[in-house]
Amino acid sequence: MELFITRIVLALRKFQQWSVAQLAFGFLNLLKIFPADAAINFADGLMRRIGPRTRRHRLMLTNLRNAYPDKSDAELEAIALASWGHMGRLAAEYVFLDRLFDFDPAKPGQGRIEVSGIPIFLDLRDNPRPFIVFTGHTANFELLPVAGAAFGLMVTVMFRPPNNPYIARKVYDFRAGRMGKLVPSHAGSSFALARQLEAGGGVGVLVDQKFQKGQKTTFFDRDVQTNPLLAKLARQFDCEVYPARCIRLPGNRFRLEIEPAIDLPRDASGHLDVKATAQKLNDKVESWVREYPEQWLWYHDRWDIKRSL
Image (tube, rainbow, N blue to C red):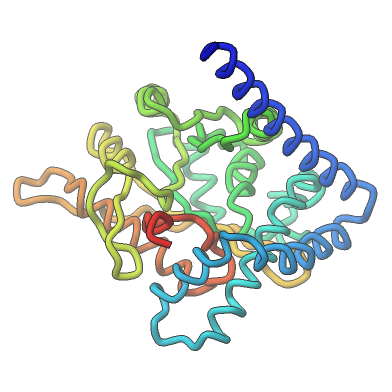
């Protein structure tokens, strides 16, 4: 009897996940009917209405209040609404990613996309060596590996699949066709990234995700645990580490930036300091978020406080 009930529960859960996925796919397919700008702007407005009605809005406001104790409730609410709009845009931009990314290395400054740090892209392409690029969940971070591919620079990207398996499969197929090799984050992902670096290639990593067993660090002056993977890989392969980010500009335009390689902290014996490096990554992402707070995903439980709400 227990086995029968378990099967029923699993079947219902599977059906629920399938139903949610079909609704999401239906909405995105509907957006394809409209011009890109109209569809993206519509998704922005829709999420500004839906987001504040969800339980995640409370978490978002708590995160913002902790990060910006000096801001008023009205200021925090305005950032939260803009962040919901940003999430709506991010979803809609998946549909039009091929059309949005119109950057031509031979004709810079003539499309929706502008790129800062072109010489770095070209140097990494023309002088192959192991390297790591890191970013955070700012603006449309999915455009960064697409930009690399446009310069002929294929980077192996680690990503966290959505919890819904139907959506995860769709997202993986979409990304794989535009971003090169993908490595889902799981127990064996570090080995896949290490093999890429050992072969003299590059990897890309998001560093602002919640991590339960990471290095004890701070983010916006609050305790967090940060994944030490990037620091450990950099220590093992003694490779360069580059910050990169996407900035959303008015008019559904974007600026993609790759910065010069950062100096990684060393301990007294000259070895790379893993904890100090993890903190340096947090500090870099925090500086980006402070510059454009509405373009970060504040609904993420980065500080692991959801259980206390």
